[in-house]
Image (cartoon, rainbow, N blue to C red):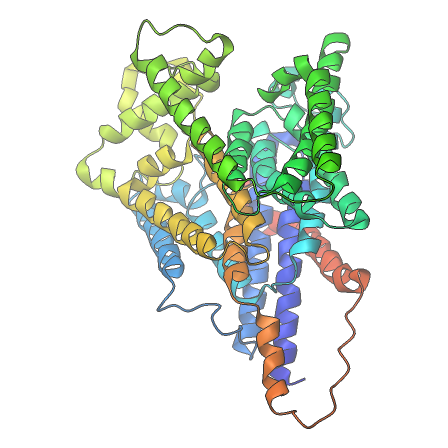
Length: 554
């Protein structure tokens, strides 16, 4: 093995450790609730810069990426990344408060610095992440998901294992009751983690893999039943609709979906019983309303699984045509009902669905107010600010300037638009929003062209879920770095298999030679223990170092 190959192998192992640290260890990194935002931001900022600089140093001394990893001239996704970065820098320079916009002090630390370190992390992962890490990384995300969910449920029942809320008022605990932070973090994390976890269970073959991925899927069903966020339901729903339209959707997929449905109804029914008979704190998730029919739902899912398992006797029947019809009916039906409910005054009430279909200031725990004042603030800006924005994190300041003496107590509570796209429009302008949509479209288009390659489908579904979730949620430094790394992973998985291409070259020059014995593959423990240990150690080290490097932010 040449020195260049050794450096490339070291870079691949480092990129794997980076992904383990960001996707599996970082979500569990926590301190006191009162300074949760700055703790998470400084830790992940330090982590991304550390790995990006390390991988950049390896590149400088000879660790060249595989061909096709960073084709600057042909790849529109890289140009879109440049546009996102430049628009973020420009809007920061022209911000109402450049210093606050650079660090994102006015908006959950989602400022220019986050744009810069996530771009650096994206390039590092895209350059060196190996294509063979999907199964291990997905299982690691599943373990993290199970831990997050269990701690979330414990705190619902007022059990705080690590003293996160020791100095926090009871009122705040009732409003933000997750041990791992605000519900915005938990819903955002679950929005991209659950599609990865569920997809691994859907495609698992054999008893061992089914059990291995079924355990995280079981806890994923619990997460759907307890995490209090409308955005999570919207995100998972969008991912399911995309899945129904794919050719891989067969009776076997539907059978596994019935198992996941059984997990969910079991937990929803249990939580409904606990809410009725035992004290719990916090809100009640939208999907948890199905707990009233938990037993019936569980039996229906069990019956569906039994019919598909025994009646078909192992045969797989394609269902994607039916899935596309169902997805079309759901989308068209939702659009028609929404238009009628909002535009036809005499349209009959649909009961609890009115809370979802009719948009007003009270919609989604006053998200309607946030959307209205964000749009009004953007319309009130001069033309050049409509194009370039008021600066990252400046939503609250722009709203205060727009409302003036008419600002209400409710308006004062919003430091984000609770819609990433609307907030981008106000803070980075038309240019920034267009750059982000270009970046998203370039990646999703590439994914659609390479859907059948290993790893493309689950990562795409995770991103679709997050992008739908973003319609009614906040871009925060606790979640957005992971999303950018998933975009980078998507590009890696869309490439042709690199190991096969490497193995073909020596075969041409060895026609008359004896066939060499295949190289022994390392076991799972030997393969994954080093990156897991390195990822956890780097997360701990970067978390501690961030207190020194960014001490002025605390």
